[in-house]
Amino acid sequence: MKHFAGFAASALALAISAQAFAGTVTTDGADLVIKTKGGLEVGTTDKEFSFKLGGRIQADYSRFDGFYTKNGDTADAGYFRRAFVELGGVLYKDWAYQINYDLSQNSGGDNRKEDGYFDEASLAYNGFSPLSIKVGRFDPEFGLEKATSSKWVTAQERTAAYDLIDWTNGHNGGLGIQLSGSAADSFYGSVGVFSKDATNAAEDGDSTTQFNLRGVFAPMHEAGNVLHFGVNLAQRDLSDTAFDGRIRSRLGMRGVSTDGGQDAGDNGNRLTLAGAEVTPAGAFGDDTAWGVEAAWAMGPFSLQGEYVSRTLEADSSAYDDIDADGYYVQAAYTLTGEARGYKLGKFDAVKPSNKQIGAWEVFYRYDHLSAEDDNGSFASRDDVEGKVHNLGVNWYANEAVKISGVYVKAKVDNATNSNGDDDGDGFVVRAQYVF
Image 1: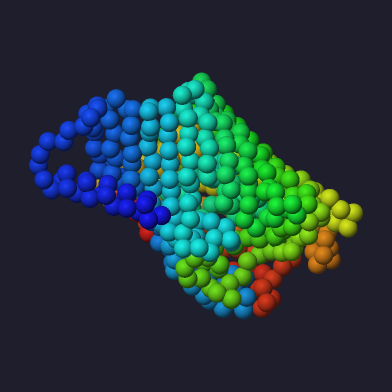
Image 2: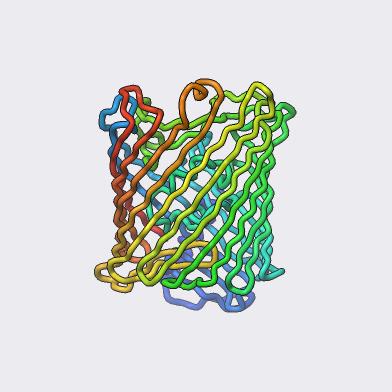
């Protein structure tokens, strides 16, 4: 981290010096192009080499009560949701690299207790265009909301339905290799193999192997004119593996339990839908998740949704399978008329056309998640369900600053907090700066 920070500081100092002193810059190769809009970017005119130094900061504050706390009283949380330093670029034209270091601790899983960690450290070869081969540490692909950058997802938190399948699109400290590509401007696909570590531990010390597959067909794929369909599949083998088998959700309120920074402390309450924290080796085998996604956008209006399903297959006669499924539906409208950006396979930023008032967007999303578990304490009760309403507004002040606010209302079936509450509400505000 010291070397990375030192390089970033040197690059920034170089940029400041270039602004402060007039003079001639010479190179040992092609001429350089230096851009300072949205970070610092330096590249050769022949596009053989480049690097870009940037990042994102997301500062959140929330208040919540009811089911979101164990005693039902109001609690609050203020924290950095993400604080990334990002360095990426091109080497010898066909190679691309990306290094993202997160200082916030909040983007990792529950095991992220260190001061920071590498969110991504990857190298890709693009010489077989339109195919790309990527290796290193990066998130597997599963779902439209995950494919869309956290900078430009509509609500501050991605759908609560993803909590059912949190292992499918997080790297958990592991490494992977992925092949991806596009065709005919309308098709995109990726397949990856990942080696995971963190909370899972096989008896022989072998890591957990995970496979991911995603396919997208988008016959309409321009900003303000989008028709998008996708399928996803992920599988991992948990045979002879002891793991934390709980399926839990914050129900859209990160502040009940953050991985770094302020939260509700011991009073924060998460919904546990299924599973046991201590799941012994040999209890379960294959863990399989699949999902479908769809989106439509016309001008300033967009509509999207996803459905996900998961089956954790019992590997012992003492256990039954665990099944979970969830979905969301989201509608968004830009009051100032701008269309939401789209790149094949994912949505992108809303770019304000009026630099004085920015772009204003309103949205509503409904999340639904449920699980069936006939093991342990869950055997004596019906399926646990969570339902979450999200109503919010985004102000894109410019291409770097975004201010967001969302009201969240949750309702739970067949579960309560310690006070007997089965519903709760709260709000989250975020200030985001992207450079």
